[in-house]
Picture 1 (spheres, rainbow, N blue to C red):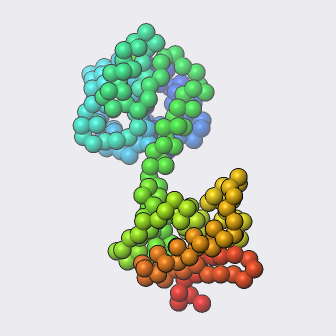
Picture 2 (cartoon, rainbow, N blue to C red):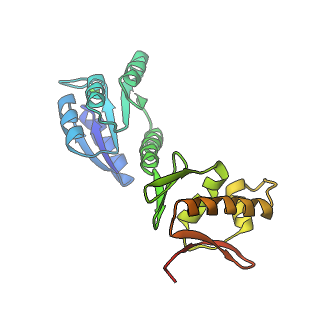
Length: 226
Ligand code: CA
C-alpha cells in the first residue's frame, strides 16, 4: 500500500509518516500542493492524505485538479477543527473523507484502513476458472464471448464453486453458504438450483460442468481433464 502524505508542518508530517510506516504502509511525504499534484500524477497511490492549508496550492485545489484529470485515488483531507465549512468544501471537490486536527493515532489508522480497503474491494470485479468468468458486480457468467445472467442464489452457489474449484461441496455446505444458516432450504432446493446452473453452463458451451459425487455432493469438473 502506497500513501502520499501532503502536510507542510514537518513535525506532524514526520509523526504521521512514522505511524503509517510502523503499520507497513509505504509513505511519500511532500510539503506543498504543486508537489502533491506531480507525485499523484507520476505514481500509483492507494491513498492521499491531504492537508487543506498548504503552500503554493491549497488542498481543495489539489483535489479539484486531480479529479478533473480523472485521478480517482481516495483522498483523506486534514482540516483544522475550527474550519467546519472546509469539510463540506473538501467533499464537494471530490475528497472521500476528512479528519479534523488534532486527531489520535487510532482514528488515523482506522480511516486509512477503511479508505484503502474500499479501494481494494472495488478492484475485485470478477472471479475466473477455466473458460468461465463470473462478474461479481452484475452476477453475469461469461464464457466464449457469451454471457448469462444468474439469479441471486445461482450467483451465490457459482461463486462458491469458482472460488474453490477443486472442492466438493455437500448440499449442507451449499445451503449454509448460499442460503444462510437460518434458512429453511432443503436438499431439494439445492438440486433445483444446480440444475438451473447446469443448463446455463450448457448454454454457454463451457468446458466446466458440475459433477455429482455420489452420497457426498457436488464439485466442478473440466471436460478433457481426466
Ligand atoms: Ca498546513
